[in-house]
Image 1: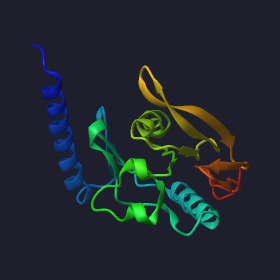
Image 2: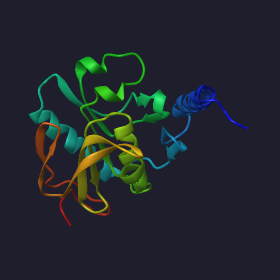
Image 3: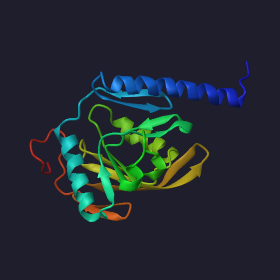
Image 4: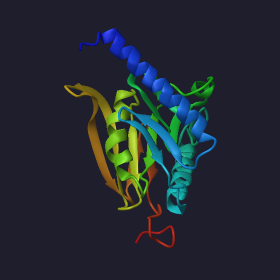
Length: 203
């Protein structure tokens, strides 16, 4: 049986909305974080552990020290959503202007200046594989990944068209201790915590 493109799109949209309705109801009642990818719902059951949350705090503070006052490193809700792609994500940190935050419902991903993820110990492929694919599809111009498992990370930029869809063309890898640039701002990665370490220092 052949499905007309319009019907296929309509079916995909209905499927996405059903997943979105479930995620919004589950967010208030079930532990963990829910996101929607093209494969379906991703549920990170694990509550973020100390090094994950501490990394987020360090990065937010370091960025906001060097960014203009009207731009923030926002953590928490709402999600960023691209219904046309069937994607809903919640980055650990969203670099965005306060003006673009003043919306009803989810953020438009194309208003983000950058998305930052701290790799979870329980599901690293969500950050290193799936979001590396999804964020350029959503039009997020800069994606920075910090991995407390290894003390390494990467900053991805320059969305370009490929046969498999939009992808980041430029990847700059770093190790903790180096200065890195996210969008227009350079920050230190000194003394970010690692999983399994008992202090915030390097091990």
